[in-house]
Image (cartoon, rainbow, N blue to C red; front, top):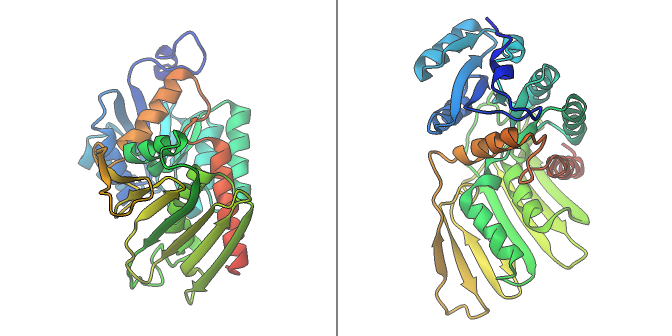
Length: 342
């Protein structure tokens, strides 16, 4: 069941701006959709209005668990509901493009899970569709909205650690995973790089921008996706980033940003830290300064708040996660896969 007047009556005089609660639709019903929905329900200005799955039974079960009033047995029904202000796409990577395009084409704003798409060509296609339809689109790279990450970026931009010269980051988890698991299944966009490596690459891009050179190595699974990958980014400034990801061994999952006048250290699970360590100057004997910057809920609230801020302002893209950044990160992942013959 869809409506025709709900969203229109809640929009301000400036086209595209929304007043009142933002109504969310959840597209897919897996674990990430569950976690995001639980965080969304912590925000008083958000309403989880509808959920869609490929089967009505799955959608109804998800809706019952989370108290969602509307459940749809197809993505198209959710996209057609003009009472929905924004759709969160939580499918496997392989379906991101088609699901997001369906919603954008119907005029629904979209927050799409990372990586935005399987490759840069698909990312550019979604951006062009969003631009042509005049509809908001953002990649759900929740790391970029984490308060501690934003604080680290501020420290770097304020010159607290001098000129950044190296970024080190790793994200490795231990298997084994069955061949059908999404991390190994090529049909689902499997492999360490797209699922895990996107975090270190995105962090380096956030701090240093687009590199001038890329080098990558990888060891494949029997299915042909990457099991263990290393990426080295080089910059004409002399800066570099050493990044690793894998699904074969547990790594510290930490990150370090070293500058000419100090260092920032991000703790385990660097992509969702609640604090950072700041080392000022070059004296390694001097204690690091701990800066606590807690996040809310599971950590998804901050990207949802940014989406709603942008919708109320009538923006098509977020300045914290601009379209060009999503495209450039996908280009880096494409080049890494090309060099690793994946």
